[in-house]
Length: 77
Image 1: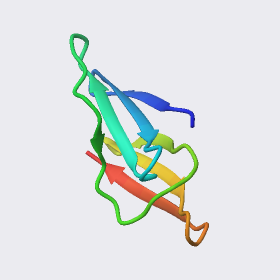
Image 2: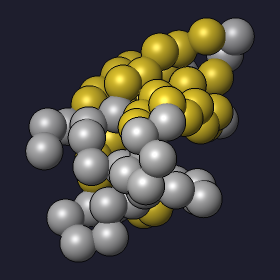
Image 3: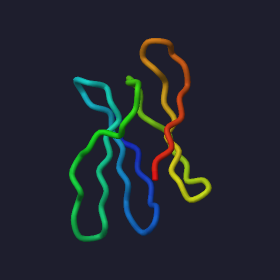
């Protein structure tokens, strides 16, 4: 699956989907080091790459649910 990346608050945010658990993961880069992959808390899973946008000083992540094919939004930060 493809990764999604954005710059927000002077950091690089990289989003990916777990191969086995299908959860959304995040890794940030502050210009010196990577934070390491961590799961973004959510109630669902997805089998497609996430889309994102920065709006109102937050990152909105959009994805499709596996079980119902519904479109979901998860606000980060």
